[in-house]
Length: 356
Image 1 (cartoon, rainbow, N blue to C red):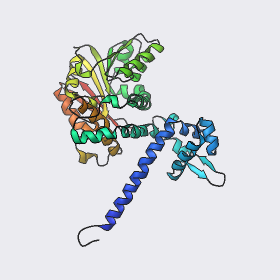
Image 2: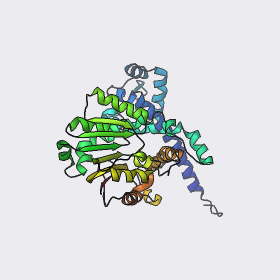
Image 3: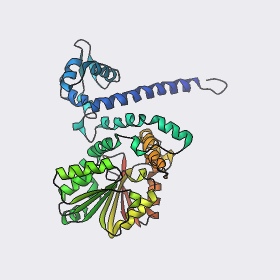
Image 4: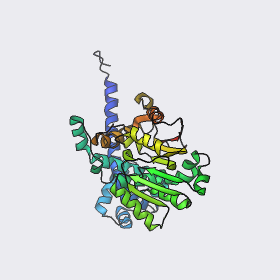
């Protein structure tokens, strides 16, 4: 301990932490590469194998695979036997790194790191000049979000999410009007339209690519009880039309979230339900100290959710707007009853059940 108040031991411990941050950040990028190239999926079904055998099985170039395996080995994600020069993905690691492990596949989420890094220059400039980075600067975001939803929302939709609202499954079976606002590529809505043919489904999203993809999949599946349209949620102007309105991680990105919530309130029938999935967290940073995904969620908020809103002269609410702010805004939008629920397997989201 220095007499001037400088704690050398604390400084050294913090330096070690920052070296760990550097290493873990690098591993996140390489984990994303392993996911996108299918290397984890390939290794999960292979016995211990050489880099050449792994590359051949995955249809990739060996030199790149070998260097990637180096990062995975020293990062302790992959086991290596120097006597046989073979690599093995332990089953316990595959359970968090492969597509068949969804919804527990953490590798899919590491794609966000490289995606956010691609707009770092624009974010730094926004720090200096204000404004934000527009949605169009994130060319893969729809794709990654669709995969994220595909392994988190879709598998839980019928057994966990929809049953949060008593009687909703039965109502969908009988036939109701449903809107998914900010539907992206429409995967949740398409799944519901397939399962509940007596109900009618509408999906609105601002993304041309998202709507085009949604229409293509719906037509490929021959669905006639669903429609998609490009629409800014802030421009929604329907009254007492829907029995159920859903938003899945969509409100905190909006330029005008208060307007969107009021629009949703107006568009619901008097006895309708608004089901809002949004990021689990508190509006107060000190309450998020122990959040298991806190740094990740604040980073995504700063480098995507907040900035795309600010780029549109919006409020810049951000992903970590928190339960307190969400409940306040829902009340101000006109909802008189709001229940907040969390699923045991989902540490990332809260589910708000809202009634007029």
